[in-house]
Every structure is written in C-alpha cells, then in structure tokens.
Length: 277
Image (cartoon, rainbow, N blue to C red; front, side, top):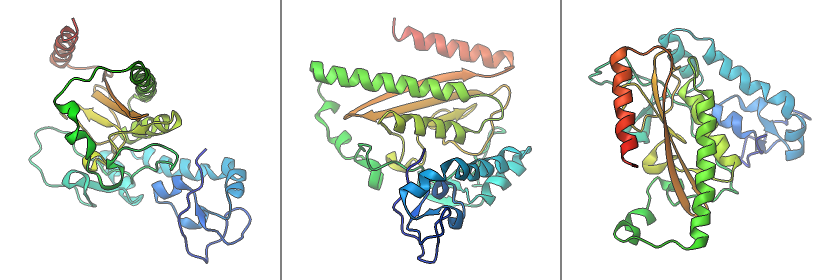
C-alpha cells in the first residue's frame, strides 16, 4: 500500500474518509493526476483505513486507457489523463506528437507523470537535478578497484534485487500490456526491495526502466502504447542499492515473428553469448 504524501493542498479540501480538513494526498493519485477531492486525507490512519475502497479509483483510471482499441484511441485516452509526449531528452512535455522522419510504423505515445520515490530510499546524486556528478569524476573511470569482501557482498545483494525485478517485469509482458505498466512493475518492485530505480531522472530520463520495442535500438521510454503480437521487447533494469548499481536486460520475443526477424534476433543472442565464453 502506498504511504500518504506530505503535499500541501488547499485548506478547503476535506478528508475523503471522515470529512475533516486534509493536508495529505495519496501519492498514487498525484502520479495519475486524479482529482484532489477524492485523494485528500487528514491522517495516515484515515488513508490506511480507506485504502481497500480508495485504490479502486486508481483501477478505474487504468481501465479508461485499457478499453481503448486503436492507436488514436489509446493516445486520446492517455492525453485525457494528462499524460504528455516527451521532448528534449526528458526535459519537456507536449500534447502534440513530435515531428520526425519516421522510418517504420512505431510512434511514441504519451507518458505518465514521474513516479514517487519514498523519502526512506537511498538516492543517487542525480535524483534531484538530473545530473550525475560522482560517476563521471570517479577514479573508477580510469583504474580497476580490487573489491573488499564487504563490497562484494553488497554487489551480490544488488544483483539479486535486480534479477528479481527483471523477472517481475518479464512476467507481465504480453500483448495488450503497455510499456508504462512494465515500468510501474519495475518501479514498485525496486522500491519494495529498498532500492532506487537508477534510470529515473538520470540525465532527465523520465521513467524507472527502459523498454525498447522493435526498431528502438535502446533506452526506449515506457509509454501508453500497448504491446502487440510479434513485438520484440528489450527491458533494461538498473538498480541502485547500498551505493552499488547493477544493470540487467532481457530480450523478449512475443508471438509470431517474421522469419527474418527471428533469424536476426537469434544471431544477436548468439553473438552476445560468445562475449562470455
């Protein structure tokens, strides 16, 4: 269950449960940009007590997008929920599809707002302003460090978390699922394990993982597009935990692929495996 968010709201707003003056808001409602009147609570106790009924509000918001069938309907439903297209490498948003000389049928879709990270989670230095500072200036860019047993143990812990998060993402991938929903699974699984989803705000990247579909080479931004039968999906998961960062990826083929695409994918995976022989 989400925790209440200490975000100031209008003093005229009342608790959705008891009617008292409210100064807390449901973080999931903030993320989905739902009406504040149904998202305000006076205390954490009221929020927790009403959670079972309140969470249906989030489900209804998702269903409005899931019932859309055509790409235009999916885009329209997302825009109606205040989702926007991403511009300037994550630093800007727009309600209009960006102009580009597209080479295939794939198009960007609107994206949801930035997901909430609890205060209790240890965060990397780019969390606030999007600019990594320690990483580019680290001696590890030039020298090989011999890890201590304690460092190796932290690496093992972080690797385990990243593997579990990637497996959780892979389990939900199927036709009809949006890449934003994959991102939500990655975000929540990472937070639940005590980690930070490293892509979030790294050089202003707006999401918690990368989902690269079909002709997208890498670093695709999760959005409102639903996966289709025959899609090739690459999911990149990066977890920051106890000062260690681990990157994992999974290449997933779904449904019926044209023969030359499957051959291309098989050749790619064969070359990748030889790197580790």
